[in-house]
Image 1 (tube, rainbow over the protein chains, first blue to last red):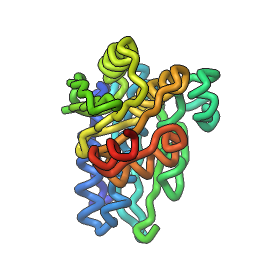
Image 2: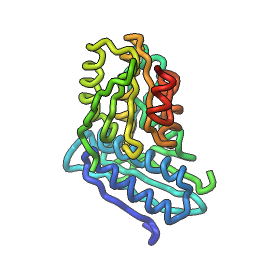
Image 3: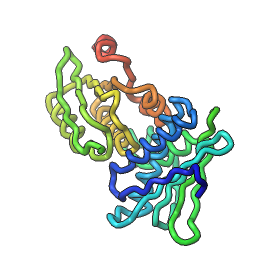
Image 4: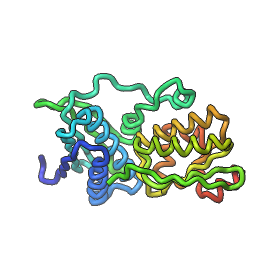
Length: 141
Length: 116
């Protein structure tokens, strides 16, 4: 971990994602990210942390979610790591017409927002166990 | 910490029933919004305005709850609007398609004028 990387270890409990949101917002503000993109960053950090808690760690109270962030080459990079196996199958893009018609369940909005609001996103297994979502937001995007 | 409860006061403004929603919008909001909607629906409302706190934290769980309410208003032929939304969540609501089914209004006054 580089000297300028920030890392937060979260309890695996819904609500704690807000700690990571606040931390990422402070960090991004220090780095000079625009207020509009800071709001985007807060949303994607929250959604990735919620997914990690619910789907990665499957709600286990003893599990942790680790959020780390750095700024390199004019890009804010955030990694959200859980202790799970990762995403086996990505949900389709939510189709609001079908959801409103009650033909589909209202799921998949977290991943949809992560894809929409980041400049780059990767989902990777971690070598010694766990799963990590790596998201990038460019300073000038 | 994230609030896990909502306080929702229903106010009648002519033909429009205003849902004054206090607190964050997350998956924990589902029983509170459902109960408020059921209560209003039982009274035969035709126009609903959801007023959200500008500073409210809204996540994908809250978006799903909102969309469930939109689905019910569509099924019951009710007109629905939303106000009190920050610029960031206006963008999010547009991205996910909420704005296809509910108009976003700048203020309560503006909403009541348009919806009445």
